[in-house]
Length: 229
Length: 224
Image (cartoon, rainbow over all chains, first blue to last red; front, side, top):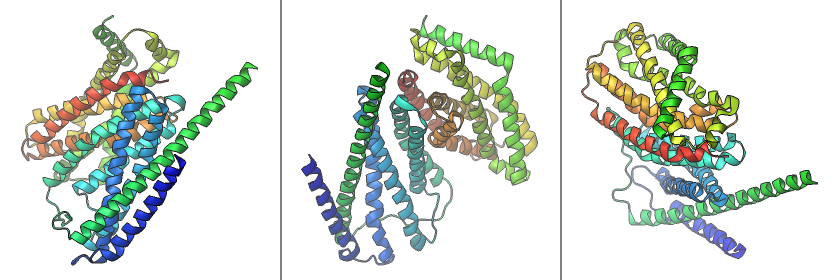
């Protein structure tokens, strides 16, 4: 198991190195945006990983409520924390890209606003975990996680409607149409690399949480034995 | 006891307690009055401007005021270990939850009915669109806030600094409902047509989250 995880980390680092080379050197420079477009190779993959993390958090929360296994709760916590980190990266790289291309740091456009609301929902999840006391934390957190995930499509729908029915500056943000094959290449390598990074982070945090749970259980046992004596 | 009689008994008890003490309604009324006055100082709007921002003002005031009542929902039951007694009784937890939601719903609707004339006077409001649509928005929107708020109040009483926790977890989830209420109200006040999309969205939000609450309440209620 240990060997396997070390091998996976080495593999992740190798892919990350290669994908960085692909994104910064091999991929052609975008015609109108210039080099700043290369942030796309970080922006989009991290957004994907954040979404993946929140989905894992949702599944793990359901499994926790169903089976009451502390390991599922550890996975929910790990994926929410990593998801918030990646979502923060999305929210930081976005404005850095938007400033030179759109001329503004931020606009209340549907996708940006939805991402911000998503981030807020999961930050509130982490705050609830921090403030909740003792053994009931996993149940409360799992309930909130399900609320949060159910809310995501509703948030997206409502903000989309809110934004499209009001006049707004026209935004040329679409990168999907006609991506150069070399760009696709770099993008897919980065997608793989960051997915691996996300998995490594979640796995590490999951193991740490499992250790913490074990230590806590051990403490409880010791306290019980101490009082019995 | 059937679920219905539990709901009815709890609801009547809460209404009677509220009728005698008037704690929740008084604090909500005064709180939203303060918000109305402070907003008026902060933005100093003309009649024309206030029609454009009134939707936002009204709902932000009611949202903040509702939190005051929601925080008291379960805290009241913590004294004398009422919740523990309820937990060991065979009564279904969802019946208790529904009673609390209905109680809060009534409190907030009464608050809205009492505050609406004040908004009209202070902000010189006059609705261009039909007023009955505002009532529909208010009922659907209040249910959206109150059903999730009651559930999250049950979460937040289990935490340290419980009064702070409720808005922190309630507001992010409520953003779509708030958006729908604010935008629908603004549309009706300005006569921009029927906000049918927002009404449908509020209805979907209400149905979805009422179901999620009923599915999850028992686990949260019995969490130890």
